[in-house]
Length: 511
Image (cartoon, rainbow, N blue to C red; front, side, top):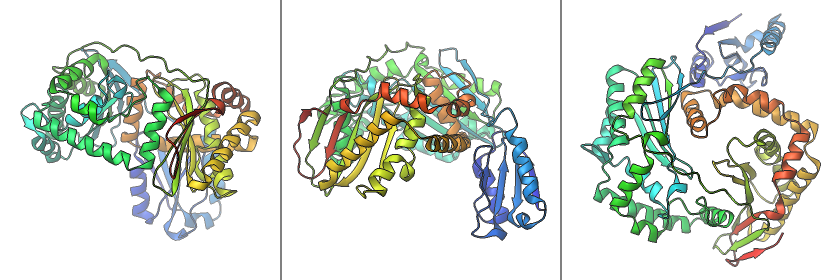
């Protein structure tokens, strides 16, 4: 029997598994875990392998072995052994500490690949624009336009010359700087030197500021030409009112024009400081080296102070509907209300409930009611967007203009029925299996793990969050889902935005 057992660290990448199986079978593998398992693909049995995997060993079987006596019995025995173990998914071991200037570090050692992923997260998203809409996004883009003695081209070349990747982005809650590099001593030293300069000494050159402002103005014009962007901007404005989450993260033409270089310098010095930073590190370095890397990155970065807490998100007690005319044959429909903050006490019940309602694609309840039964929309979905404050529970669909009201009616009725009746046992079991079975893939690479670490550090999740996720999802009951949805979600309080066809831009209250 062609069997290969690979003794590997817990952080073997999914790409590595694919490489092993591709080298032997030129085909995708099937990942078998205690919660997701299945037969080999039948398209080419002689070239396909099934994969039975725990996080500590990978066992590969040729599909030809299925035809041989005793294989099924062996495979079932292995499955039973794994399912009997105490830990279904061995999540990465997370270590945390603070640098000398107050930055929180989240670290996972992953020695299987000679790479290092670093992700720095600052409480410096658009919610911190402080009356200057767009400044967080502008600062984020400017970080790649020069630092220290290097201009934008030289900065890019320094990363490219050693094969490192570098990027920045800005969200409502956070500003993010990411880097991936090899751990070869010379390469790592150069990469860290460059990244440290970006963090501590960005140039903010006048010509770069003007160039970025022009680019933002172009992006703002493109948003006006996009029905989806128009709908999203209107939705957040209507949903959050005067809260910092309300405005367009890019700002507007007037606010961008008014931002000065001194505004940028002052804003950067206030928010890009040690006490306002989370450093996530994943890669082939040990704890001692990770500590050195974190301290090096914070060199010449002031400790500063944490910003004041954001204002509490107010949930409206009345519904608002906004229709916006747009020259399109399709209507973009968005509706929802603020529901979930990070570390929400109802997170697991709401998450599992939404998975079956609208979070699992075409097989979701919304997919069946809106697309399969009535053909009203090709895609329809719902999802929670948790943030530091209550993020939206967002429902979305695209449909023909003349069907927009019918689509809205069906979606809202599906939600009302779900709140009233809760999930069926069959749907609940299927959703829990789907979520927990897919969880290993969500932490299957260094890049995915570093994103989780940054999120956990930023929102102060416990270090065992990944270890307990599957267990907590599996413990969710239909009663908990029905209770959480009935308390937290009220379709009568929804903000509804429809963009497309002929309409009237205005606000109307009502159900």
